[in-house]
Image (cartoon, rainbow, N blue to C red; front, side):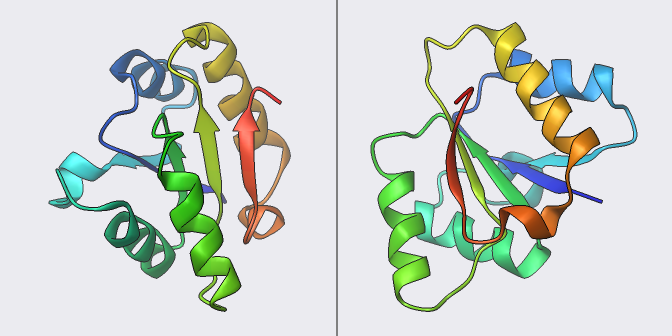
Length: 116
């Protein structure tokens, strides 16, 4: 089963919408894990240790940190980047589809923009 970690900046409406659509999905916010205001590299390390795919609006820096981990041979469960101006409903639909139609292993070391 896929597990998600939302970055601090992810729109609450996306998190809430995904939870409403899939109430049993294992999705947590960095704020709930004691990681509020932590650097991207720390969030990615935590996600890797917990086997959680990261959902983030931080398109300016998170992507670079993710690729740096991959190049250094430090694997990660995956990263989905969502632009701030992306319609909430479209983001929710993409996340729900991924959760229902794929496995976490499929996204290992993958950085993907949602929707594509």
